[in-house]
Every structure is written in C-alpha cells, then in structure tokens.
Length: 261
Picture (spheres, helix red, strand yellow):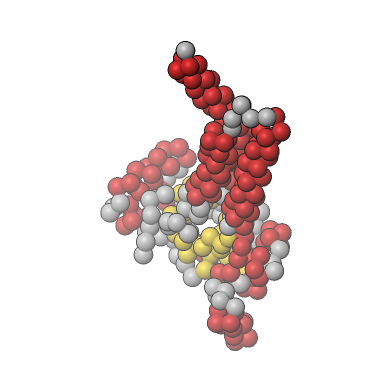
C-alpha cells in the first residue's frame, strides 16, 4: 500500500513541476519574441545579422529567457511546500532570471551595429559600444545617411592637421580611422569615390561556388544584370560579406559566404 502511494505521488510531483515550468516557458517565450524582434529588425538588421553578432545575441537571450528560468522552476518547484515557500522560490527564480536578462539585453544592445563605415576600400561594422566610449551620440550619425544603420564615408584627408589628429586618436585613444567622427562624410554624396573601387565580382565567384549561387539567386530575384550593381566588402565581427549596392547607393543584398583578401 505504501509503495503504491509513493508511486502515485511521484508522477503527480513530476506533472506539477513540468506544468509550472511550462507556464514559466510560455511567459518567457512572449518576452523572447519581443526581444527577438528588436535584435533582428532594429539592433542587427539584415544583412548584418549573421555577420556582426545578431545570432550570438539571439542565443544569449534564448539561453537566459527560454532555458535558465524554466529550468530553475522545473528543479525547484514543489507543490507540497507552503504557499509562502512557493512564492519565495518563484520570487528568487524571477530575480535571478531578470538580473541575468538585464545583463544580456545590455550586452546585446551595447554591441549592436550602429554604423557601417567605408574606409580605404572596405566597409567596417562599428558597434554602439565604440561610439558610447567616445561620448558620441548615435543620433549624430543620422546626418550622414538615412539608412539603418547609417552608411558613412570616412574621408582620407591630405590635410596635415587632420592627418595629425587621425594619428593621435589611433595612438592615444586606440580609435581606428573608421571610428573617428571628425573625418566622416555623407555616404551618398561620396558614393562615386567609393564605388570607383568596386570588387571584381567575376573573379571572386569564379573560385567560390556558394557565393556564385547566392549571386545568381539575387540577380534572379532583383531582375537586374550583374553589371547593374556595385560590390563592396564588409569587414564585420564574425565573418566578412560582400554588400550589393544599387547605383543610387542603397544596399539591396549581400553575399554571405565569407570573403577575405
């Protein structure tokens, strides 16, 4: 008889634990979907999502929101405890999850793609953290482009005083030239200079089958010819891609296969 009672209680306990964890997972899923929207469409928009850390951001948030909280509830929840003890346990779990989630959101938001800057023949993805450390407002970048994130041209000046300041910031402040606001110029006003150094896309795709397939898919969907577009390399944090520009200076696509010089 006692054994039968124990066997009856055990499935009931597991069922209660999984039910509580399922409710927690459902609530967390709603929060995750909201955060995923911001990560995918606002903080790391296409085509920079995979190249500049969007996937990594999604994984951090998913691990905290969809795994950590529900797993702790599954382990700790016990319906045999008093209502006061259950509330305390859930409160502690909630506090741990919220604290971890705040850290995760701050990290992902701080590392988001804030600008795509052209310097010396290449584009570079610059994070919000870089501008924050300089005390530069991200709103000030919108003067250079209406794209999201802004496309910017970093001008290689021949002026001695400008070059001196560029070198000073490199050596003293550890700022790369493409991170220096004082040499920024509007992108579209400079596009002829930029596109004069477009890549030889034929030479690149001839030795990269994946990239050639991506290019063919892009051309089929766009309805244009290969020579209608300009191809520029993007140096991002996780892998390099080739951005495909229209003649008017808009990003229309990308080739996600890594490109290295």
